[in-house]
Length: 68
Image (tube, rainbow, N blue to C red; front, side):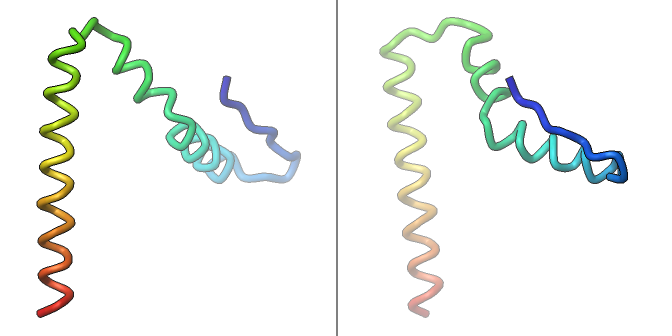
């Protein structure tokens, strides 16, 4: 469970911003979306492969830009 302690003089906007950051970093929403429906292991492997290819091509493009 994600939670923060709000001090007496702290602005509510700052506290909310801190909570959102902590919530996002903890991966709660990502885990919730992942568990929303069942994905077969074969489909999961295929999706991981596609993600890896995308990541590799993006990294390669960044390297090409830096060397130019």
